[in-house]
Amino acid sequence: MAVLVNPTANPANVEVELRQAEAAANSLGLQAIYALQASTEPDLDGVFSTLIQQRAGGLVITADTLFSGKSAQLAAFATQCRQYLRIASS
Image 1 (cartoon, rainbow, N blue to C red):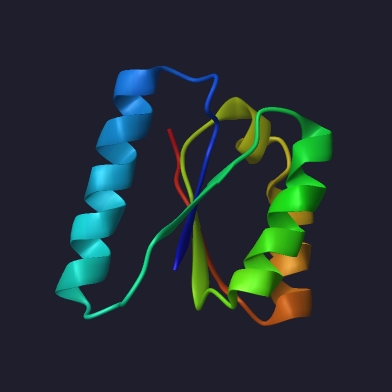
Image 2: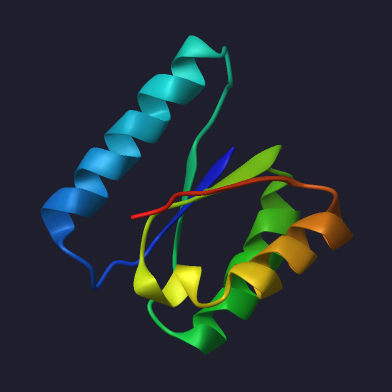
């Protein structure tokens, strides 16, 4: 499972979100958590490539204005790659 965070967001919030995702993954018996970072729209292309390379079973997207503004693009990517997608709302 991968978790998409914006590293330029509040660092304390990012840490909390990653810890929560890791706890949830552990409770579901998932092996690994990949923290993916994007702070600009072009960064998202790299995130998509990394997600495919890591063969993550799903993508959790944290609440962030960058990501909520790109929810259609993120959903289309997830559909194309047959990835489970969870977009957090703020």
